[in-house]
Length: 504
Image (tube, rainbow, N blue to C red; front, top):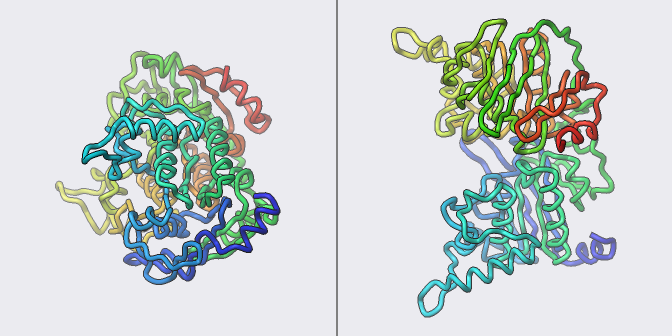
């Protein structure tokens, strides 16, 4: 906001004020007396580690959770949100990490779902279509209104969510990790839309772990730690270092831990991997003690390549060797038996069974070892997982906690624990820190360094170039299914150098 707009906003009643918000779940205090204010035409960044209470607070704001105690005021008037419908009627809309769209319906149908435009008792599809087209025109984008949302890109689905909010005059917009799955170009376009919404007086609460974004888009920064407000600053009065220290509650000297590992002989050798146009004649080597980064723009073929190595997709050509032995990978079961583990890009859909306990998730790839006579040895299972809970600092009230109730960082640690228990020789980390706070990121980095020091070979896929430069020994850049370049020493590389190869 401009200085004049800021002074005007501060002198007027806050668009929304949340005071003394308390929310608990079985075994967990998620929010403990949190205060938050948002002014018209302001972008308020909400920061904190995984489990700090950010998503819970925004769900209370959106009516998805009811606070145990506390007050919510809209324009100075008390509000009581019994449901998301109440919040919507008060002008509040929330875009969650997992979009609230019906995949089989079109953008128009999703926008007006449950709020259909009718005439004489009949839904007026043409009127809805014209209104939807006008909304997307207002956002400066073109969306195909005739195809189901499942065929839209992630960025396009996000625009449908924003259009849903604008369709019914939302004045308060909450955005939970809106850029997590977007390319840098898509993020720039999103920021342009946010700036336009801000000019129209819409107040925006923006949750993100990407601190560079916060500096680019926010007016103020609010920080939560362990369910408590620990800082509220104008963006110009807080440095990146101070943001991190408020979030983690301690001084963090470096974002990437130092590592000095002697890199040894080749362990995994992939030659001539091919699968349609997604993976085209890809060859590379991973050496003992090495962290090899695969990077490139979204759609470059990175995930598709490691899925061939893990046996998740059939390969049309190519050979995979581990410690000189040719592997016949027909399924993930074969890869696991050979000593290869994959931390998937989407931990919720592919890495965990969310309805099962964290203990059961840990045991899934280890059942043969943890069973005797066809029965799982529960005591041994609990003891072994308990060791990883302590070692990895997994924040969980008990081992029977459902995986869906954990924060993103703790979910990632559970996935990592099950592969560490397998003692895998090659570990593939696909976007290992996506949606994870800086404190948990550092812990994941330390674990990766420790694995490399123990002689494991690590493949890391990351879209975050600072992470690639900070963690990798060697970098392979991909574009349209091919390797377009190799940087032998990541310490000498630059982001510009990587991007030049990524768009080759």
